Image: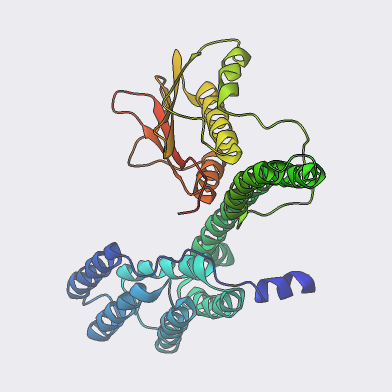
Length: 383
């Protein structure tokens, strides 16, 4: 228990805090307007109507900073609520607060959703004091008091749930990116090792044949120059990619020429149609393997997720500078262009394309289906 509390106390603020959004101002404007109307309409049934209305309006404005300064907002709002409840207890008069004050339930949610562990612990304590005095002032039986307490604290529980799911998804997304970087690093390691081995072999051959063939060193240097240029390009592409330490796979890396084999692995619908065009002889092994991996992932996603798809079209086009991969299906995805939550496979694909200096886009077609488009430079140079 003590360890869990220490862990909670050290918890940083949740990432991705959006701050004050445009609709927060409209929310505050609506709450303020409602408070003014209620203060006038219920003037005879509440204690000190002008002061109660002013308090509701003032606390409503703090909603603008509930994400950026959650503990400060909790301290201000629930200190005011505590004082208000104490006044009701002392005077035994009618309610002091307005019904509009229900907006205060947004504060515990924001505290737990965006605050740090220290802010959450302190803020929950202040909230409990505020709600405790409210229960003492408004409820006469323990059952009603417990129900009111559970209702009041439910926003905090919702905030904790949303925070946990958001953090878990962010962690899974980071792991997907790291896995893709590790895979890319392993493939780049293999291609770089191949080029370095070729350099060493030709250097040894040039030195051995120098005495019998005067042209041998020059020919060896030409080969070494070409292999060194390829190695440099591969090393640049490897920057930022993390290797997890496994031994490299000695099997040849698959490439564009192997994409057609993917069609044979799909035993049922949809059928796979492939088209290759343009100059592709100058692409580096890393780009060749990347195109294959991106096509493989895209075809797999289409087969699994495109409902009622009859065809997946795979197109690879080269123009001497770039290679464009397009994978399009004619199925029903159930997703729209305005609301598309990327899966971890798509996140990994985008990371691989980015590390190699390219880009990848994915989205629904206007006439149905889904299309993935990747554009990579033939030399894999980082942009």
